[in-house]
Length: 180
Image (tube, rainbow, N blue to C red):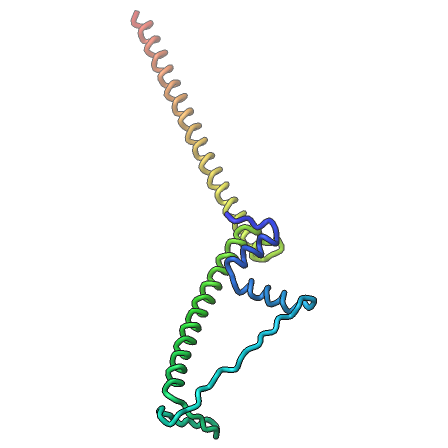
């Protein structure tokens, strides 16, 4: 069973399960720390291959702009599109797994942490639990009373039998005395 005694432990546990929380926290830390030295990334622009007359080109019009694409650029574009699709599907899987893991963590936490007593749901649950306990106690007392009544009746029946047997013996003894 997991134990979340410290807030730091809880955060680490949630981060291990839910990478979105960790990423958000890291981004938050980067945005809030201005004293640290900022890293700048110098990106080179993509090199474009000028179309040669030997390559087949296709003219594409987009909002009045004429763009010529070569076969190599088409292949690169299709490969890039496929890679983007794979990345998107993997992101969806990761997101789904993160959501599921987050839900699991929340369910574990809610099982371990009792709901505050002022919660209406908690009050309803407690009332239902008390009613069930009262019904169970009533059934138990009825069973005990029935058992006690049965024992009393059995004892009375035994006493009646003994009394009848005693009277029969006394009558037999009187009859024997009268005969003698």
